[in-house]
Image 1 (tube, rainbow over the protein chains, first blue to last red):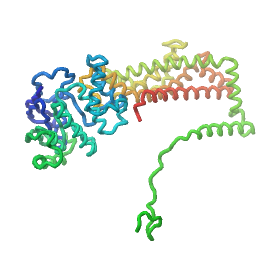
Image 2: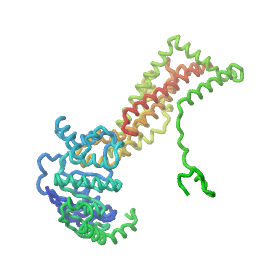
Image 3: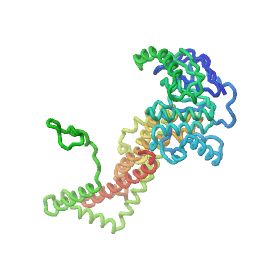
Image 4: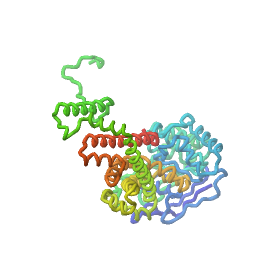
Length: 256
Length: 271
């Protein structure tokens, strides 16, 4: 299943947030959206998953989601969004309970995703007992359990410390190698974008417009460690963004 | 200068400690000691005549009055009457309050219609409405239960919708993003999220229920702790009065303890 964003524009009352965004998210591709803070990249992601309605334009699903897919467009949130009153397995179970699955099938899915995210030993733990990295792993397990067609990740690593971020980044790469998931990954971190993105979309500051789209052909598995080519791309992205970021930094937040 | 040396250099001194404190802990043995010392002093005061028995009866006299009550078998009649009113009134008031609060928390129509009404009626002392309740529900059990029900309903409504308003919106959005049904979101995300606020509301309404119980029983009740205190008061039987008040205090403590247990059980996911 592919996604096609057509002429998306959005405004909150007086403030124009997004202007004429056209974008293609194809199967098996990780599309990273970067931009200065407040450029509307998280708003755009909410629109892609149908949590918010754009003022103009539309998001189209091309093709049907694969067989056995319970929730085609599935989010991974920056703040993990785990229910504190449910254990790890309870949090995964939550998103399966509304589907017509018998107990054994649900149990099999939970066991499978927890094994894939290396959480099998933490089934009965409550979120407060887990580190940030483990919490985000639970959120990833929960997202995988509904067999999504497209993963929508809203700064999934931004709430974590830099070492945990590295570890989780490796996990995401490894997972992609195995399963070739489709993803739209919003971040303000250029290093994450060049490490994970097949396609990097650079947004300008508010109102967000597409400044540039950079495609990186290098396989994800080759991108670890020092890499001159990636460094060059990251530098180029930074030059594109620097002035925007500086201007965005000086904007009043409540100037609406 | 060796840094493992124990001796300070000539003009060096340790940085003074400025942190710590502001962390009161409750030590278990202190509370009983305070109680025993206070009651001991009181008893001593009345025995030696420093405290006139007209002003305050000795704790031993109050205890004797309490034992009279136990031996005459009246205690159980008073307690049964009071507890029945208290439990029916508090339970139905709390249940109705949770339902109404959930409505206000979830639906715009209920919010715009009921919230101002709740705000207008909440501050009225329900005791002032007692004569009306007697006309509406009769002089018997009806008006007493209704007073408690009304008194506990409004704080519960406010606690419930306050709790729902404070549920993390991101969790609700998460539920929507996974395609959970509306009912599932309410049952599995919103209500558990509001539960801490609902339980602390229950704590407050339990205290209100006991206050209103006594007020309601002071009008035309044959049995009940409130009636017992009222009769004791009008006869100037201060020993009985103290015994009755002590029973009320114990009831309040037991209520608070039960709710505390419920909090511990239902909110064990919190640290």
